[in-house]
Length: 147
Figure 1: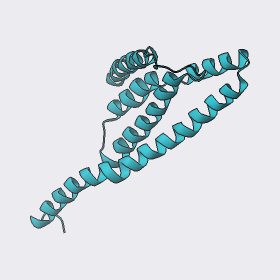
Figure 2 (figure 1 turned 45 degrees about the horizontal axis):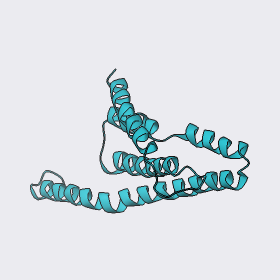
Figure 3 (figure 1 turned 90 degrees about the horizontal axis):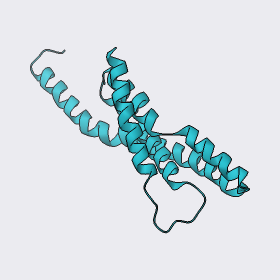
Figure 4 (figure 1 turned 180 degrees about the vertical axis):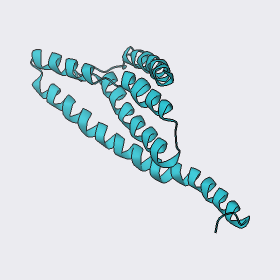
């Protein structure tokens, strides 16, 4: 039951944040590619990779918290269905190049941001947290508890 509460609460926050970002007007932009949805999906890819890498490889997050963040918050924040709907809208308006560009940019930037999130989590965050774990292990070894 606890995991469903985490998913629902985090999902509500993710949906509210997506809606807020979706309603931001990009000043002086007159292109046909929906930048707000692109931004949401790119940042969502980055955050999902970063947080899950931290949760599985650096810290041992509670599984209910992982579900709340990944499935709830980021599942509600990112929006594949909107990407598809907006692409179909571009196609039906005859903007084929924009539709193909939108899909290509979404996939390329999404994969790139996920990769950067994983690298950032492994190198920088694990270095920061890893130092604390190494210090704790060194203290235990000095006390003679581990041989």
